[in-house]
Length: 105
Image (tube, rainbow, N blue to C red; front, side, top):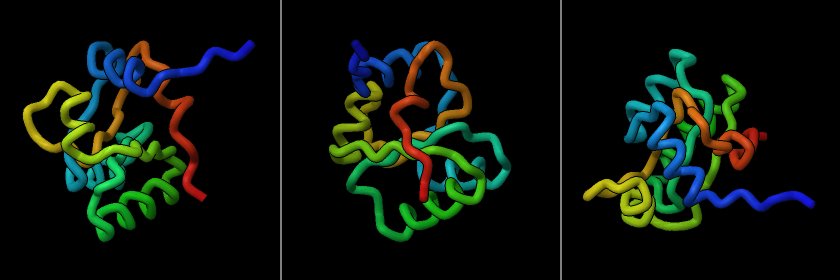
């Protein structure tokens, strides 16, 4: 019996035990430097930024998780008082977040 992994609980674990960066531009910069293990993007991320993130993720074989909610909802989940469109995962800590992210094809 496979246990369903909840994105919300894994995100909380990730933020407690791992290392992340917030923001599309910083995530793209660190993707180019090979410092990102996975990327979480909100469904409301601007098209041009999303295209860049998907491109660099594909080039470096980094999986992407598309969160179905808005940047405001993702920000709330991350415990931030602002909109979060992109989270770059530098270290997943004790979370299983990498199992939720899919390779970009």
